[in-house]
Length: 306
Ligand code: NCD
Image 1 (spheres, helix red, strand yellow):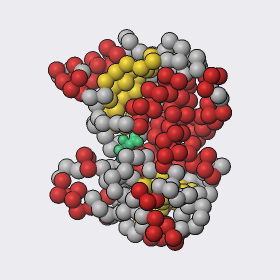
Image 2: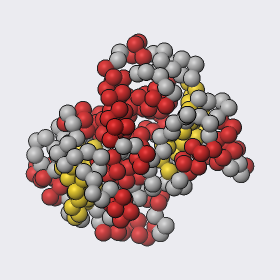
Image 3: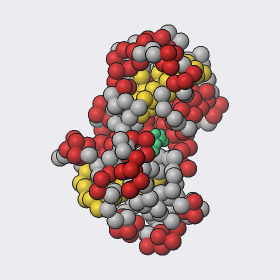
């Protein structure tokens, strides 16, 4: 039976641990050792929304394992522009590829694609719903930085309403024990109740605030997100919150030395570039772990040992 990576809802703690272990094995392998693991395999890339890291890291992951990639990163250059349905696009590209990765503005689109497809489908972001491969690489980054996740106090900062990276991450963190989550957002961008209620009674406790200062002083991790301009139904509402947080190096004087700052990127102005040279900034290391984790995901879904 083919398997997909569509939502954190489908991944229990054992599945998360397995991906983390696989990524550690891939990470420890030299480039030559893994260069032929996926010889002759093809990744189909269906991107209906902009992307830099997710698409390029999936393609890099595949190329460095010996496989190749075909697809589109712009609707305008595919038959979607002629009115082709998502299902028909999937039924076509599955004839060319061994695994599909899809990004789409509509919530639930990846599930629809997975149901239509005979080959594994990876959700690279469906609207403001889910971004599971990002979450797996976020978990791997935390594990590399802290040795494990249990006991961490993590602040999720910014647009918690529309950020799919935050939604998936909350669901994942709930599978671990003793995680304290500080939700830092302006009131209109609070984490939706359905996400919070979905993890009630699991291993995570929440506190909520609009103020970034206590998070800097008391947390182990700041996971900062971009205000998701493209998801706002009304751009006037976006204008009201677009500059709500701007973390700069001077604010980090109050931080404990071990504080680590992550961001799925792209950033707009929520983290000043003067934070980049500090010991706290780890978002570009996080980018690098994206390739490792995506190699683990491709190997897993194609049934090849790491
Ligand atoms: C994120 C996304 O697309 O959800 N980017 C990414 O994949 N690294 C975050 C964002 O766009 O703000």
